[in-house]
Image (cartoon, rainbow, N blue to C red; front, side):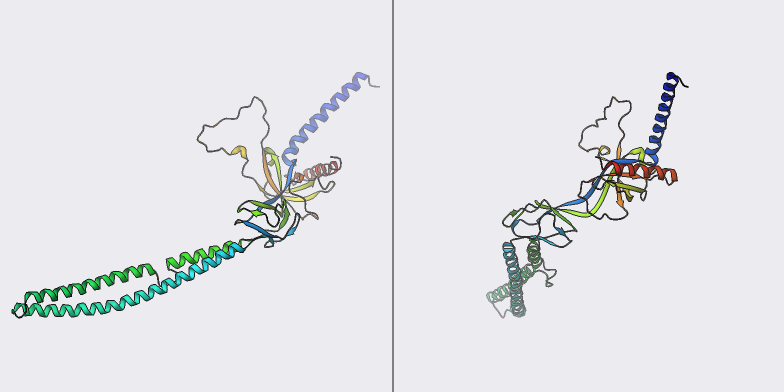
Length: 355
């Protein structure tokens, strides 16, 4: 029979041995079979807003509506935008008519130029003849001066018509409508007006669920102001682990996930990516000196890094974004590591029935 002192000593030794075994287990497990409850279900949430301002005419969805990419969500009153399209169409057509008028003016000026050039040539011939006669004293100096003045006036008319044609040609621009600057300006204005009209119909950019709907017919929707949220159907599970727990984690590493909302169920998954860093590793460029982190602790808190996990099979029910989960990593392929990691995650799945 053992004395009470011996029994106590045995319990002390067993307690110390148990503590040491648990201590070693947690050190090894944190590297080869790490587990974290700091996991969240994330679904991309897109604030949906109109690209143009206007009054809401019709709303085609309600909260929790399931929509597909391209589905019509709501419409703005198109009346002012239709008016803008009509005005831009008229301005573009008017610009084309103006160019046709300029073409007619250029053609008339070119005809006048031909007449003026012919007159100038005739006046030059007359002047040359009078110069020869003047040399033989057959015409007076007055007559010669008249002929010279007529020839010079004809040349001035030719130059004036050429300058006018050049000015009209510049105003007309390119003959090719696609390259004509004036027509391109009005055509761009028309296309922008048509685009604004198309933007009065706000459509879903991806599959998802409507949430936080905050508009109704008659409500003024400013451009860029979110009127509802579109929650994507694609699920991303993010998990935060201590740095040393991810020493042997790679893309494709097997994992298991337990959701708080689905206690008792373990889902197979795999690691899809590891984040390149966290906010603490980003220093703002503000022109100020750096401020080293001050700590009086001998052992500081471990930094946590984020990874992304995807389920191997989709869930039967869609969990809301922000739902909490627990993620178990299988950093080791060994049978013992697989066994104990399976025990860990199944224990957690059962504990979710309690808390």
